[in-house]
Image 1 (spheres, one colour):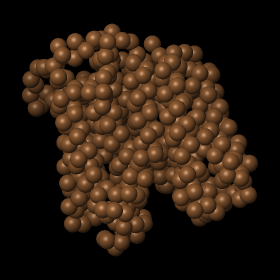
Image 2 (tube, rainbow, N blue to C red):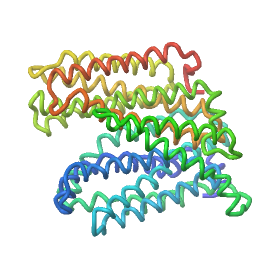
Image 3 (tube, one colour):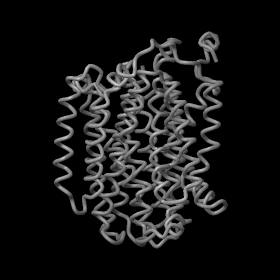
Image 4 (tube, helix red, strand yellow):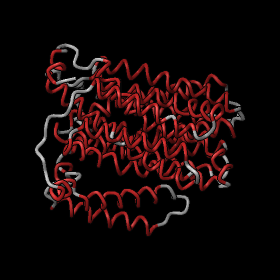
Length: 461
């Protein structure tokens, strides 16, 4: 589609043809994150590996995604978001082929790393494309479009694990990797035909491009993130030297970026943008609370409450359904501030129900518990994303969106350590109650941060 053709769309700048591939691409990272869980046992059996070794397939994707999300955003500012989006999809295609044909476990690790790199291009570039198109058409903040991205994320929670289970049970574990081949091809075709090309950019030398990309900054950022996530993943026996290393590398990274001509992350601009800093902090807290609730609830319902996995899956369904309905409601009205307040209230409410639950708790109360968590997810997902959109400069939205996802991954990894700390070897009632009070504190922090922050817009735009 040419720019002229896009402009002629007039009142419909975000039709299905344009938005479809962007939404599909943005879901490929979380789908790959979740569905691999269903194949770890089969993969371990084929390659004669234990649970700790196969779990590295999960962590390697998180690590590469955390580093590459803002890096891909930086690449989008240099080469154009559509080009980077397509390049990431091609990397995903190659990753699917490597994983499907992998002769050893090492090839699976390479495949998962490439999946993390390739899928990391989608969300930051999609946000940049949406921002540029909205500005070009003068539509202000496209709250319905942002709501669509939030809803796509909620649907992913439903699709990931069931899709993985179906693929493993019918086609074997290699299908968890090969499914990326048709998904990548569909995304490529839809993007080439539905998303207009990036504007022409002046040619630059390889040396100039390397300087503009800020490779030393990327390396330092990667070192800081990997060290921090490694520390957060091992809080049961904290490696304090890793925490010290993370702080040291972070200090060098900030020092370096303040002096770089083209920093991968503009730390000066971020330091002066208090509202965006607080949005990242809320995203970290909400991500920590959401993942800790989801994983903690499911483990406790099986081991503490004594339910079978099918019943646990059914009880978790309201989480996604409520999330989708709420995200749709608030996006149609463009609400931002009030949903963030309600997200904190709902997380505190979820924690209080968890604190009251025990082995005899009726199923109806468990459904209330997961529904409250769905309110948290639905309210916070759209509102935080919209706050990011309005608080980020137009020319920096891709990097800002990538960093937004990095904070979410930090929350996810932190949550696994938190669950390990409170549960120990088994998910008991006492451990579940301890987790509940921690989550009540997290929800209270989200609520207080939101009430105290007068820079959060009331509505989008």
